[in-house]
Length: 520
Ligand code: FE
Ligand code: CA
Image 1 (spheres, rainbow, N blue to C red):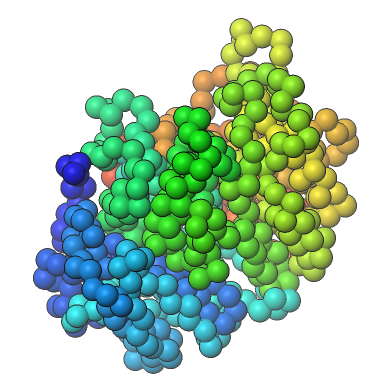
Image 2 (image 1 turned 30 degrees about the vertical axis):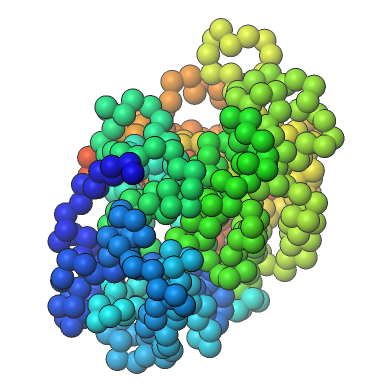
């Protein structure tokens, strides 16, 4: 057994972390008294997700010793019973739903309660009980009714949270934002340590995960972070995954080691199960073997048709041996795909039939057709990121062509560990941009960062569609109104230590009908 290093956490902070959040998730006095003994099973916090107009999922996972075998739970056939309740008020004086749910050993003692019968577009509070212990309370918000007239929708986009790369101070700030929901674009965990481990502010102390139990413990380590717990406790999330939940740059049935597909799929199955166990997902996103249904949508009133995509599971392998490369012939192979036919039909229909003011395409990897040359001696041939949409040029064209004639599409992206904003065209097509793309930086991946990455001037000279770049850590906040979509780039100056304040580095407004970024 690999020796796991306990995270640098303050026991008091773990227990009181959520309660320290300005009252929103404050535990009632009785709850605190019960949570005090050292073996509370609620060490990984609580979460809510997939909000619908009548409810949402509430999640927790029993883990009295989160980094031990079985997270310190003894296995019992038929699982153990966990109590849950949802209240209309923070003090839990008006409980509107409650029940018991079985936490199965087969699912790592996680529970996913799909709460129904609630009112649209309002906050609720929820908590769990197990053997006399009470969990911290979380706040969850239902979605509005489709078509309902709204003044605005406000949400954050977050992701890329390599634990060893930095502290989750950005999540502490996300927790305090006024939001309808949080979108996570993936890289919730990292399977490996990237960069010089001796310079890391935190340490993983474990090898690359391959088994279900390996992945479970990786999630446990990440989810012990009280800043991350606070962001879950205060907001309802729409989660998607990218590559590092399984392995760096996996694509469909291919990993980067050239493992036979039938062998890699065993690992994919274990990683998908651990992902489901640790995320506030509906039963419709429970994996079946090595497959999982993660692309899905939500309609936010009359304002926003939100589409959450899966750009990993159905891909063909990256062409031209991956990396930042000049095109080889394989990039234009008509069999290359980023999404499959079913997802393509789904997104095309969703965009075409939306009767909202805006269409959100929330996904993982860069859609802009960026030439990545950023050095003076980079040569005469453009270099493309084979792991992004542009590595699949025919798929990129097909996807962006779906935006034609809409004038209301906003693409949200992660993966880059850098902030970008730009105007999006189908590859090789002339004429005005068809959408705008906001690329959100990382919560921690990449470490402290800087205001601008070396070579950005050269990068911009090759890519006139690229309007903005910044290399700090943070997240973005989108405020969507009838005629204007506003995006704020919220950044921190450092993550190697805790306590960095957050500031707005740049803001852009998009007027509906014009795929154009206006600095504000
Ligand atoms: Fe990442
Ligand atoms: Ca990624």
